[in-house]
Amino acid sequence: MRRLLRGLGNPTLIIVCLVLLVAHNGYLMLSPVLFRILHHAPQQIDNFHSWQGALSFLEAMDIPRFMVGIALICMALTLLMRSRLAWFSSVMLLLCIVLVNLFLVKGHQSQVIYALITLAALLYHRRHFYKHSLGSTSLFAIISIVSLIAYGMLGTLYLGDQFTPPVKDLPTAFYFVMVCMSTVGFGDISPHTTVARMFTLTVISLGITIFAASVASIAGSLISHNLQSLIKGRFSHVTRKNHYIIAGSSALAQSVTQGLTSTGGIVTVVCKVGNAGLYPSAQDVIEGDPSSTSTLEAAGAGDARYIVALMDNDADNAFVVLAAKEVGGKDTKTIALVNDSQNMSKIKRVHPDGVLSLQQLGSDILVRTLNGDSVDCSLSPEIFFNHVQPPSGNNA
Image 1 (cartoon, rainbow, N blue to C red):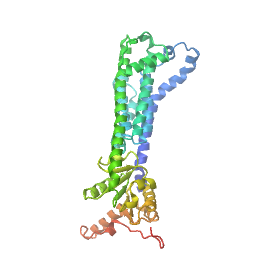
Image 2: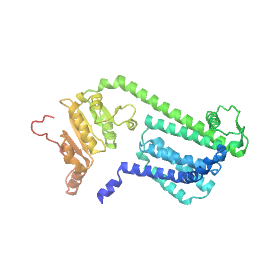
Image 3: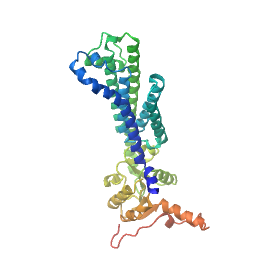
Image 4: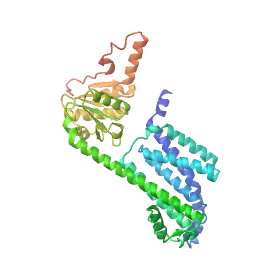
């Protein structure tokens, strides 16, 4: 039972479940429109005379439903990258589903409840979505712009006769949508009904919002990355000697980094790409694979005092120690964190100089407390670290 509960609390499992929930919400929005399209498509293809006639079987809300469903599925895939932007977009889309179904459509109560459950789960587990990488931001921008263009073209063709002159072909619809999104407003095509005008306003407002947000997000990430690279490239390598290398971006890694820095220690953090934002901007951070020898060499492993593996996964910590043994200096010590005490023997097989087990530490302190022993004055390094003796003939 404890293993089951521990497994249910696994962040990766939580993220996968949230991704499936968001994707399923998208499918529920998408499926009625898809079934209607598949049902009418053969007849429409045989009798195709105009785009407006081909789309005439759709209802007024089908195109927005279709695009929201596509967007939710795309956001679900982006959530796998733990993108904060994708999380925020998913929350907004689910909120739109709830509001539209409650106040406009006034139906699909089961879908509203399901969307609310998914929305609550995303809000409760928001801490798992913290990354602001350039890759996820660019993917979000591309998906948003393509989705808006598709929505605008389908809506324009659906309302074709409600424009002056009427819009009856794809190139003209694409031209009109791009003019609206860019707010150029040539005026050669204009809506002459209330429905068409309201639709045009949605394309304009969404175009301004998505273009501005996409450009600001991508440009901001690029400028921030270049500034950090410039600062680190000029200054950080000067101080990477007799320093500490902290591998990971876990809460413990952040706390240890802060503690060492506050006491005057020189610390270089090595973390996975996208996690540098978890540390202060002034902190010396190298993004890359912490278990890669090239990444550790860039962090100055040969001149480091300690290389401390504080990652969330015990297997990753073992690989960091192996890489540190390969590129570390003769006086460099390695310490590995054991998240699950059952993996203690496995971590010891890679022969770190010290093994830190917070579970063992908590157990020892609790036993001493229950036995009435003093804890504050008698703590020694042995209670924190299970020192590993290498086999004979091994000087690592």
